[in-house]
Image (cartoon, protein in one colour):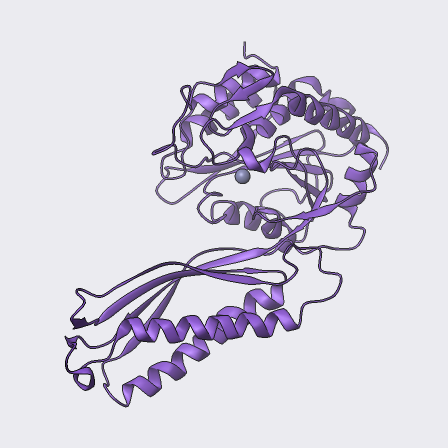
Length: 386
Ligand SMILES: [Zn+2]
């Protein structure tokens, strides 16, 4: 028989090396077997190659409504990090569980699975759903086919709790982001003959200035009540590479950049304005050399999680936790994907985001206990008349 307590489940989950670039099928198989042992049927939604999958399950009435507990099964790599213990062997020290994914976010998944063993499905008046995804850490792409299947092949939860680490506080907003790679094809030439070439790195400089101007324009439109820090949308050029030598005009340059948007409007406007600026710069440079090209590819993106006044999800969590507080976070999650799918969403989970992605990642046992307490109250609520 499976162990059914959060700590042992967490230890088992951490032992699966589900770094995003690898398969999560072994973990999904483990969860499916566990649920099956508790008479819960799983819907596994695999990628085309069959190497990764989402898992969706419903406990209680097989119908729309109720609450989904959402978590991603993938974790970030450990290479180059100085760990004091095996990252895939969860160990307890000083009231903390150390291991990759303990905080982000297998601790929440373990607590959700532990709840399944405790809850009496026959008493549930509203369904409890589990929605576990893959490829969150590489741009929230895995969850998309699951959200597409929700409401079509799968029941539509009324409320989704995304259990990312918030120290169990209620989070109702985060910025969205988009990551892009822009490749500039100029014309290489000897540096003593500037008119014979088109510098791709200089064009990159113009593109960066354009980005700065675009973001300044958006920032001026930021509403006064913005819950974010900083309150406006931002951008970053995180990687820039181009050129061969100091005496050659660079023929090619590549820049990787991102925006972090406070609203769906900004998330649409920023890449659109960049594309327009790039087109104008390209047209101007082509007058000198027709071979100039500026190509932009979207690498990844996460929709913003837009604050909605008094959403059902936020109201429920506040009631269950006995708090009036809710806030925004600066990291991205799958919340916006569920929100765009028509569900009421809130983020609340054990652990501190400061520990996520770090060497010696940990979650405090007290945080897991607080999460268990919340989920117990949630189960009671699901047993009450709707
Ligand atoms: Zn996460």
